[in-house]
Image (cartoon, rainbow, N blue to C red; front, side, top):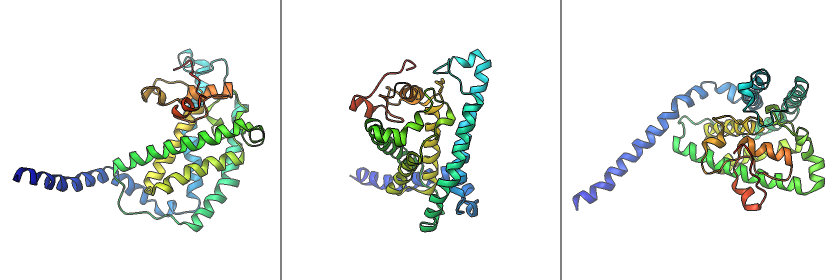
Amino acid sequence: ISMNCSLPHRVLLSSPMEGQQDRLCLQPLWEFVTAKEPLIKSPFFPVLFSFTAYMAFCLPYVALDFLSIRLPDLRKYKIQPQNYPSLGMMVPCIIQSVYHHVVLIFPVTFLHWYWRPMNLPVIAPELPEVLLQVAVCLLLFDFEYFLWHLLHHKVPWLYKTFHKVHHKHVSTFALTTQYSSVWELLSLGFFAAINPLLLGCHPLTEMIFFLVNIGLSVEDHSGYDLPWSTHRLVPFGLYGGAPHHDLHHLKFKSNYAPYFTHWDKLFGTFMESHSN
């Protein structure tokens, strides 16, 4: 009896220690972030963070676009090897992105900064909590965007007015990720912002989710099926990735979910890509 009674006691004693170890994993990273507190609490931080992260994820693929034209060993990873973006195609995408960040995203984030100043806790979140909440945020975003995307393809007026600009390029490249209308950019920004808020995420979790979300989105539009692409790392065909989304831009009437495949399979809009 004494052994059975002591077991829960040992479990209770070990749980806080495990939680402390999980926090210690991220505490140095969080202290590094909070050391830049004046910058992070600045009204300019969200737009700088957003644009810098976006361009940082795009640039390796831009370099790959220029290199793979000259190197056949890289060309085999191009999903549509007959189509390569030119500098003349890339520059308008960059100009539009800068314009949207300055004219649209900055005023919205400034208002958010004014009405809801960022609070920076002293303690970092626990690692399992971060992983779980980032996964839930991604699943929620995937569902929200699937519904938005399906609606904007099924209703001709919505497609022509708001979504058609994003389909200018049938063969996608990284910089086309945010080549979209103001309404589309605002909608996706709202989905990305509201989910961490609803879940009560720690600011560090919000930042990690944003980075993962924008990284996956850029990969979706990259036009490359690389050996380490996310859809090759996630088993059982649960994740579509770049081949899945590239096929959407090519065919228009399938693969509406940005990341995962379950919603397209449930709604009968899934189309298998040849790269899978």
